[in-house]
Amino acid sequence: MKCPYCNTEMMTGVLKSGRYIQFQEIENGKKKEVAKSYMGGAKMEGCLCPQCKKIIVDISLLEQPPTR
Image (cartoon, rainbow, N blue to C red; front, side, top):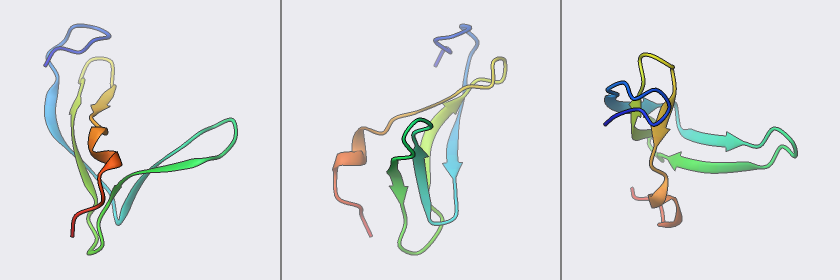
């Protein structure tokens, strides 16, 4: 995949965390869970641009119930 910011080829991989991956709004502090694992090791597939250091993840599965 090409980076939409700088057009460099992106690396495909996995964004990992302990048990949850959350996004927190700066302005009002609201949190949105984007990945969860009941056994630990939450992860999301995504792409990393080595040039401009941006990560792109697909959170379209967010509305589905978490899998065990």
